[in-house]
Image (cartoon, one colour):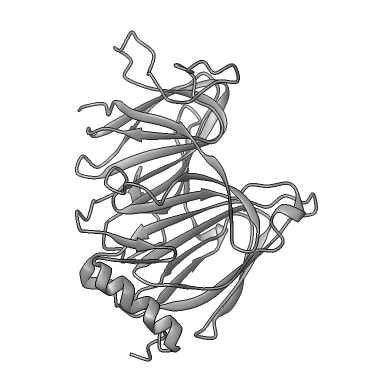
Length: 301
């Protein structure tokens, strides 16, 4: 067994998307090779309705999958195929845009005004870029949860983990998407497929990710309030990119730590990306936008 060392740590950055939604972007719209097959991760946790109620009105997607995980509040959605629905706390939607879809996502806060959740974009291989769109709408009650003897728990959205399998199926890159909670002061080693890229995104508490035999703190590019570099505990809104290996080790801090642990098989294909459209060549990208302008983007078959 080999512990994956931490390759890089960074903090999600404020950005504005949709019709004026203020969120934090962990990664996206840059070099995709480190996170391949994943393209983008947005953290849309917010307690101020004016910062999210404008939502994400009608927009296109092609060539990718969008994965929305709601922690608090609701997201109403609709699309050009006539699908309508609403996601609540704990629910997941795994949308395969395939050859093209127009959709909208409109967030609403809970009784306390909170709208919390994440959206992850996963790339599709060239062979499936023009596949038929489909949804996997998963209610919170259908997501298996397992708790280990030390109190560490995992919600398994996709992939197999600790003898359970998540409800999302048929994804080409064989991803694993977990919501992990490690109790205060506990140290936990978690398996990760050796052939897959992997990252963690911390959203509650704090802790460290490193080998127990490593006497030195992990060096990061997270900058503290005085401009100094933080080098040990990793806290809220921090993205941890792992190097190669088949396990990760996390040491929870005094308040415990909760994080998304995501891994997937890299596609290692060329990426041509502009906004919500991700193809393999610039010619394919230009064709998609020409179809949007011409009103021929949505395909019957």
